[in-house]
Image (cartoon, rainbow, N blue to C red; front, top):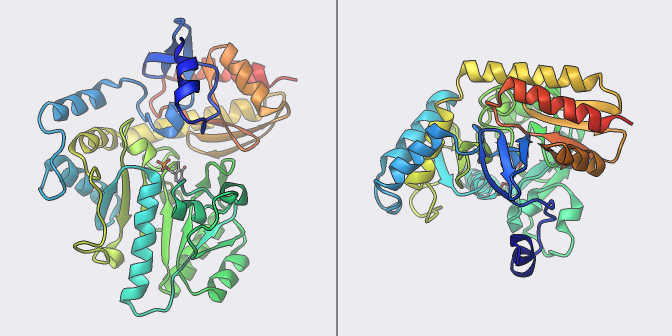
Length: 386
Ligand SMILES: *Cc1c(COP(=O)(O)O)cnc(C)c1O
């Protein structure tokens, strides 16, 4: 039996997998079981920030693996402490809670928001999220996700979420006022929603409203974080400072980790016994993450912005391309051809890409070699041609 047929028989069919069995890789190149090589513009959906089998990351992980792979959160360990310190020093935030995924990081943010309001004696439990958002697959984060089709068949969902239109500040404010809102949660670039960046004036206006009304602003940086948009975190492109941000994907470089990061205002909201996770802050995941985030410096971020500009320029003028949207190396391309045809053609010609709604989505490794990127963009250009 082939891996594909075993998987089909024994793994729950929750993923509509591409007809591709991948076996190994290095950097932004990946090989399938027949030895065919692909340029990877997906990075495991924004996870492998420095590509496959990145040496610094794998050395950091292996070293920790052979030293102390796990104890429990009843003890201090250095990778967890140092990673939290690094994130706080780079962002001006105050404290971090580590979990194992993006959805879990958002669960923590939801708990912070509810308890913040409760500590203050406010009668506020609702969290406002935006329509077309994506915040995860646990029941609460599914409920937070402002797309009805994800909610179908899973009722009843946890209550306490209200939705407003993205880029419509009047709708956000009136919905917040009408619903005793303790927090507003946004993605600066809606990823799964089709790579849709929020307008700067809209994000600024939400930030002002939140501050004036002591409502927490939570920014979901699960996909946009860790250098993806050309800044360490996407909110930095908007000149705001959230009360809480969450991140995951790219932080781990390929091992499961999530982080809920809070500002001074919310730093003491969760205390002993209020939250926990068996694996959260795991030394191996944290050591890998530290080796990732330490290398997301100004030089790398500049390269991300330059590569982004190249993609926008080249594909923006390409035949069969309607629009190119996004930020940094998180890019959504509306093509004239159906996106599934473009993805298939790219794959046949040795380039792996993603979709987001009806768009072609690119999330290459941040350090992808520029010549390799150019080669891949040419292949995409040809695949988009009508
Ligand atoms: C992927 C994603 C999540 C969920 O992360 P998981 O690690 O799959 O739980 C949450 N929010 C956003 C914006 C995401 O892109």
